[in-house]
Length: 114
Length: 114
Image (cartoon, rainbow over all chains, first blue to last red; front, side, top):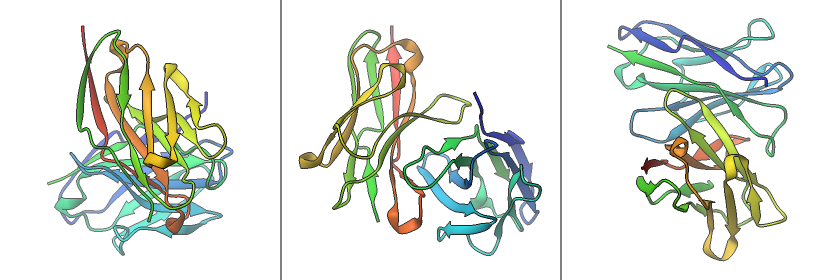
């Protein structure tokens, strides 16, 4: 069964450093998402991406964040200058079409900012 | 924006006992509702979803959920719990104000005792 994959599974970085989290969505899917889950809190939407551009973003997704689909298979989330409060589990998801389609989630990347 | 509330943070049930996890939504029209499960170290897996039609929805792993508009609820049930069901369970609703983003509840952690 096709699945969403994410690398790395765990990333440790120093405050102020840039990190790139990578995702490979399911191959024929058209919609891509990033969510995050701070320890002990609920899963929060960051951004959705369709047709090579951001379709929606939350207030969390500020100028420090960016997303890219560089090569038609990978989907990346970049945090330009990490802060302590960026420490969280980051989930990538993809779906075949819009509102009623199932979003399939990857296993997540745990980001630890020291 | 549409939101969901999961009133129970932790639930403990004995193996073989029945299970009901609560989820309440806030939305005037018919919401798109989902239940996801997260096992340790795993991503979020869809158990079932409700868009319209039959209010009793069957999902994977023997789970079902019932949409009750009068109670604004979408509770997840299983008649006989197995030890492998121990996991974190998330209710979610599509937020029509933010594209197709999912709004998650805080989750309910299920512990299964022998």
